[in-house]
Amino acid sequence: MNEIFECQCCGHCCHGGSTVSVSAEERKRIARFLGMDASSFLEGFCVVKGKRVEMRIREGHCIFYNDDGLCAIHEVKPFHCKRWPLHPSILGDESAWKAIQADCPGFKKNVSYTEVCDLIRKVNDEP
Ligand code: SF4
Ligand code: SF4
Image (cartoon, rainbow, N blue to C red; front, side, top):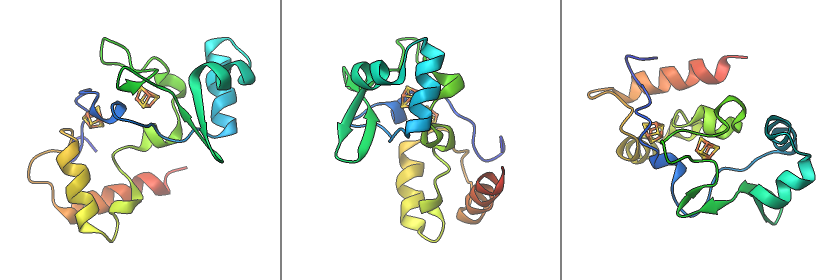
């Protein structure tokens, strides 16, 4: 893994106008971690967009992004955060790889498309 990708904790993927979706199970887990009930968590930390629930944005970044550059709920963060940037959309679409690579300084220089696809398959096959 470290030969291909190593997070630089730059926080870029926690910034922007929206965040990843958070499932009901994930909301329960995060709420428990924060010592609150799921409905208070939904009300205070999430935004509902139709059927999709996301974490709120504050000052241009996810509400859980701390000033020290770390995630305040790292231990229980949503699956989509844990998996990033090894996203399956890269498989079979080299332009998706180029776009994600350009946005994430964690990929080592000279990593090939084949190498990153192999790593994504391995990560997503893991239980
Ligand atoms: S953009 Fe990449 S290197 Fe930066 S915090 Fe996100 S995963 Fe880590
Ligand atoms: S939950 Fe943590 S890792 Fe995910 S977007 Fe928010 S701050 Fe970033």
